[in-house]
Length: 308
Image (cartoon, rainbow, N blue to C red):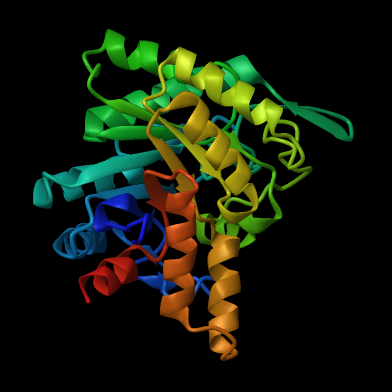
């Protein structure tokens, strides 16, 4: 009589690849998650593929940052290197790349900024140009899907045009279409080394109170050519997830983010929850709410648990 069934094919594993580490480095706020050097990334991807996972989502951590995020679109950038290595060993694994500038910007914001005294704002059009350049460099290096996560206006259309004009019309776009200015991103910013050096991201990420705006944002991204739309974070926005899935009928993803992961891990460490049961319940709820794809740091464990 069960209505909702989880499959290993629902899950995407996020991986952090860093130019700054020679061996895997644990992320203190996210037990079981690591920054990985390029020399280990292909083995990590192969292990995920051997478990039955079909896709990984790559985040890059460069040695150097600047105010033009030049490492994001460099031919020898960290994500570009990782893509080539993974594709050489795991040609059938779907590689998704995070297309954002925050990890590569010296100030940690998701775009080019203009500072005026104590105030700053992100320059949308200048940022979109760099995002399209980044997405194209990822596709050239072997990315199957590019995932813009910045929330700039018009970036999906610009990326689609850039990809199509250079022969990458089959490269898909998974858009972070409704990404909220959430309190649950803290551990990720440690993992990706990307906290803003001033201000916050509320001027370009969405207000946590807005649902109608989320639907408008999703509609715009679909009109611009998004193949998959994502809601982020997961549990506090299941109402948005449900509305998006029901209204648009597009492949719909959700990101169960670092803060959500860390909270459950903390409760498990205190003996308050059974990890396996809690995680399976959460993932079942997300799929029931409309998620076709769930990005989760538990992807490997879920693959093992679903085999049992």
